[in-house]
Amino acid sequence: MGFCYFSILNKKLQVLNTNVIGSDVSYGDGKKDDFLFWFSGFTDAEGNFLIVLDRGFIKFRFKISLHIDDIEVLNTIKSKLNVGRVTVEISRNRCSYIVEKYASIKNVICPVFNNYCLHTSKRLDFEDFNEAVLIKNYINKNLSYAETERIISLKNGMNFNRKIFTYHTKKSQIIINPNWFVGFLEGEGTFGIKTGSALYLQVAQKNTSQESLNAITTFLIGLPNSVLLNSKILPLNVVSTINANTGVVSLVVNSVDSLYYSVLPFLESSKMYTRKSIDFKLWRIALLLKIHGYYFLPEGKKLFLNISDTINKRYSTCTSTRKTDEIIRELFERFKAILAKNPLFDIQANIPHVNNVRNLSIANRSVKPIIVYIYENNNKVKGSPFASYSAAHKSLGLKPSSNTCNRYIDTDRLYKNKYIFSSKPIDSTSKV
Image (cartoon, rainbow, N blue to C red; front, side, top):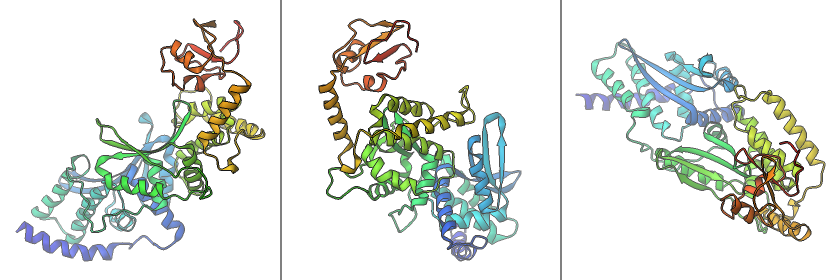
């Protein structure tokens, strides 16, 4: 009976689903479309669809939980959708956007995701969630035992209990909308600076969403490149790695040229709603310091490293004794001062960044041979000064090819909280 019953019911639900979509949400407005695509991507990263059993009653809940720093984005979502509520948990520095009124779920939340599709495995959770919502809507009376069991079965196969991750769709290829990608990036992306010197953009997701990861890779590779077609600058490449313990796949773009000529123009034309927009602005400065060669000036390198210390922090709850907004303001002012200087690299020549770095290194070596002083507690370490970076690295037990000297020399920053690298002698009374 159950199979026949639900075969008939599913046909009726398909008709009902078509009638319900868009009943309280208007589509076709460009700006609203942009936001709803963004909202879909952000939900793929941060949203949850929940079916709750409460004292015999079946309830539905859509929820996004974030750090307290991002409460404004939840207020924005609430304002634009005109449903739900925003809650705050001060003790946990958390805030949440919650929609649990059945009418709001049925008439707003479900229609949004039926029109602006999710792309990760969360799409499957929504499909089960939506089916349960429609069963309740179609019945419009006390649920029978079979109906209740069907909803419970859907609930028990969602979220962490999910075992099947196959998309039920004839259209296997996912097409990434740019606004969806920005929303997903704000939830699952990182504007990163690795070991204080290497820039990268990363998005990550469980390997259960491999189809969406493939689509994101295709999207990134397809970003327009602003350099001339006949230049020697290589096209954008996406590096994919997987954590064997967690099953999380990371997609990374780490070429300075790709970040500057492809990723940056796209992001500069996109709208962000979360605090990640601050990370992006800081990351953008770091990228400009690199591509123009300012990073190789002492003041440029110090600014770059200070950005590395500041970016991707929980801004309202970080332990810094200074207010973060004051620190960020100072970083921007220092950047403006550096821009007044002539850049070391001419990017108009469309020369690959690695070539510019190599040429600068050769020129500097011919004018001023490399000398590295290493100090520990204001005393030179054994063998100091060193005639090369590789010799300095060997003295500390590092690989000769290490990037440590390049990152720390002439920055007054401690390496491993005890070593200072300098290209000239430091007076014994100098302080860090």
